[in-house]
Image 1 (cartoon, helix red, strand yellow):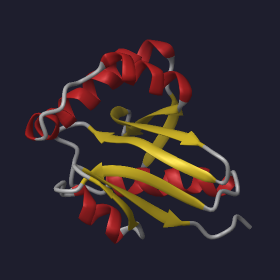
Image 2 (image 1 turned 45 degrees about the horizontal axis):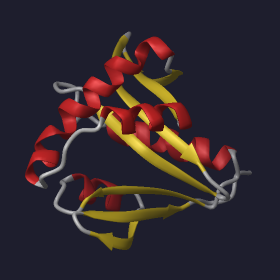
Image 3 (image 1 turned 180 degrees about the vertical axis):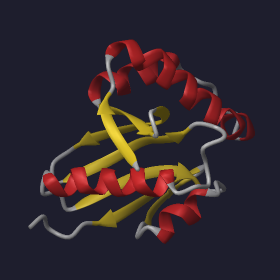
Length: 145
């Protein structure tokens, strides 16, 4: 069972370290640098959640909301807890939060060469735009009941 809890300010450094660690290889592959100030700004503007499973913190989820659209800015699972369905459950929780807000769609950007592209496609996302090295994807959401 996966649950979300609102992240506290004291969780910010842990979340930043998780994102940086998980994204290090992709950033290096594409010649990008980590910018702590960008993470700080995104943290401040987003809705931040820790992901919990069996009493352990297993990941981080950040959402941002715009006019009629939700944006999945981060979905990170800790090493050793991947490939057991936690990401899928976290993604469904993100979609549910967007539906509760009666949003039309959930959007994200992902590196075009990432294995995550297949994951998102399996969960209803389609490619909207190509901004190398990233692609923008969207999942249309059914209206909340």
